[in-house]
Length: 380
Picture 1 (cartoon, rainbow, N blue to C red):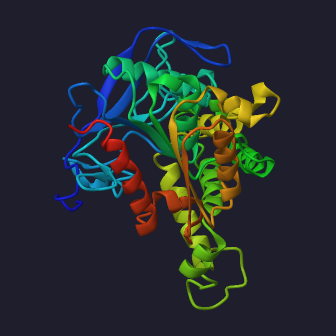
Picture 2 (cartoon, rainbow, N blue to C red; picture 1 turned 180 degrees about the horizontal axis):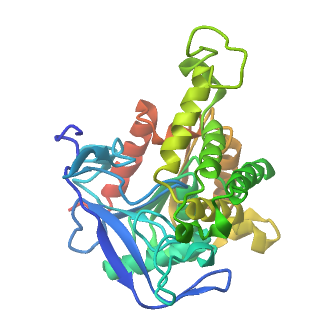
């Protein structure tokens, strides 16, 4: 259980039902859907202190606090959110949600399709970052929030935060884009494709309809996670944590698990495959691949951000080679070209892409300082 002094404490998920059809960028239409979300802190009288936290690939709505029936189940960004923390719930009303296509309660491939009575499976529409932002805006409407004080996220969550400034420029005052990029590099798309193929070629995948067969494509999902996890860490982090240490202290001259790093990756893969949905993994990685605001402007990112009106904090991490500081600087350049207010921080960290999830003093103090200034905009 987290320290009760600085934790939001016991939380519970809420569920919102939407009966207005949602049109996807692909042309598909979802007649109705549900979003699962959590909130922390209190919404002020004019509803001007709301912050939306967008999750990354394997994230979900449980961002902070813990559950009454399982105090060990702590939110994935609990170090960042709570009373007196950088995202201070004494000042802000914070919303975390599970995106459409997810596997933690919001409508997704494992949900029952009301038209067939069976899981959507492979028939669930391919979803984009733009689609997510549209659904998030509808949740804001439901909560009576006309404008967010801030929208933020790391990695894929940062892409959503950026898209908010483009889809709804008047509905967000600040965007915090952390360890993210204006689009994936070819190398990143390649990693995602290999991960997807591990799932697609698993005999238990059954074209995405494995639910009906009572199986899970565990092998493919495990391999996808192992590959992804390698890219989230830095070489230095792996060396410091595992080096070339052997589990038994000696070589076995075989193909079993010998090195500690091998054991760690298999553990992470097995754990992930036990709770994450394979179809959701496919959808999330495709959303990453497709995000590219400049595509409709002949690859001119400056023109893509011409509609933005928000203030921005862009943060990167020195050892993040999957979403390198260079990618964040490209965002900053486009924002400055449009004469927008932007603060940029390049945080020295050894943790690679996972740095945005870590409790890093400099990183947290930058977040705290920026959000303290945001809170002054609505302080009495």
